[in-house]
Length: 78
Image (tube, rainbow, N blue to C red; front, side, top):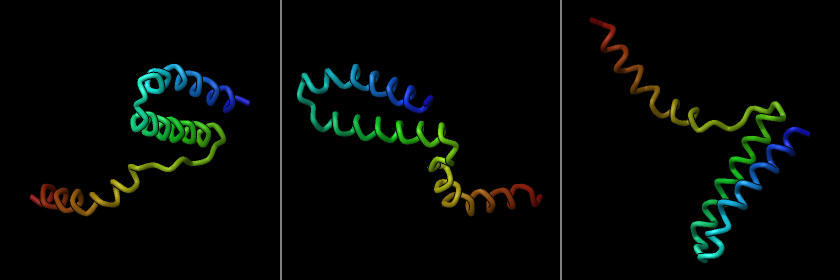
């Protein structure tokens, strides 16, 4: 039930923030805003339903871990 309240509040705020984009016919900005709002709603729903949401930091960690461990080994070897 709480997830519905979160989503309702998010959609109400999105409606308030998105209305000027519709009035000024900024369709590209409205599409990006809608995608970000839906992504935020998905994360809120996953957190509220006790699922583990997708984290971008996992990808960043996989990419930069070799570099960090390399420099950590160099700095701690002295």
